[in-house]
Amino acid sequence: MVQLARVPFFKDTDLELASFEQRCNWRRFDTDEILVDFEDVSSDVYFIVAGEVRVLVRSQAGKEVILGEMRAGQFFGELAAIDGIKRSANVTALTRGEVCIMPAPVFREIIFASPVVNERLLRLLATRVRELNARLMEHTVLDLRHRLYSELLRLSTTRAGHEGERVVTPPPYHHVLAARIGCRREQVTREFSTLTAEGLIERTRGALVIKRPEVLETRVEEALREEK
Image 1 (cartoon, rainbow, N blue to C red):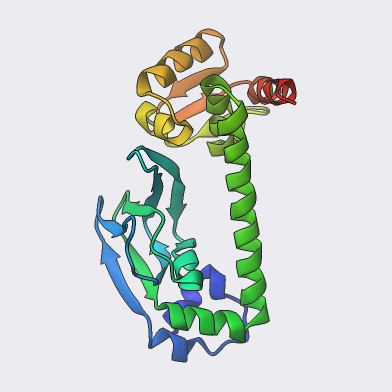
Image 2: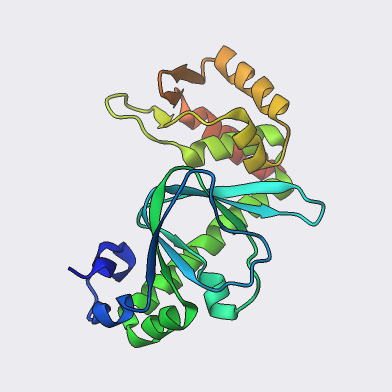
């Protein structure tokens, strides 16, 4: 079986993947291993087959902001493959896993050879730009409290068997949330205490439950309207 067929990005295409696969490398990675670092001159694209990684960006002053996590089925490094500019982010493994490393020329060849894959890439890039625009807006106009509300909602999913509730699994560390929204860990801890006292969140074994997500959504919407 052609291993590239395991990668969702290449499923259901008319490409002969075997010839491309011969030009790729497959390797395993360990927890805390840096797969890509700031200013690296490499241009390979990494397709995550197993495991989870975290993506960070760093300001000129050295402050790091977490952009998010990626899991099996996702990929990173496409920007360097497209424009050849040094890496703009750090990608570090959160777990053990495996990646398919595709050289930039191979990636570009596939993109130009398949309209299906080309459209997938365009849609993915459009989605990422929209997400970054939304986060930029939040960092520009919202205070840390409302940025925290927005980030919790973004990280959460519907809680099965509990209508109206949402859940973040596993529960996020306070210092990780702080790095996501650009504040100090102590500030996140203080806001969590307030949310708990209000009955809006609850920590259970293995999860953070948002009891009334509509309240957080309303608060964020009102804060954004006040800035108009």
